[in-house]
Image (tube, rainbow, N blue to C red):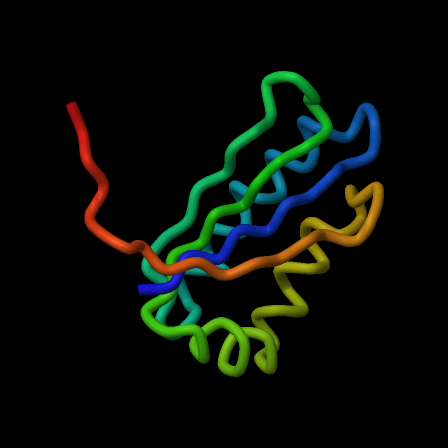
Length: 101
């Protein structure tokens, strides 16, 4: 499994609209091959910074399949009007299962 983390700074005052747009995007990701789910987190110290954390079966499901599909355009149409600057996207792999207490 690959974890995509898209760090996004949104325009001041557009935070609620961005959150609503990401929630609406659930249908986009649900239709994407290899997408296993996603979450939205918001920085406590800087309320304009968000991370969209998306789980993919493989790196290629995101970088090839999703990015080259009409679904990517749907996603960007929903969220990009709220961007203050281009997002930063990185991919991660878990080294071991999460540890809970």
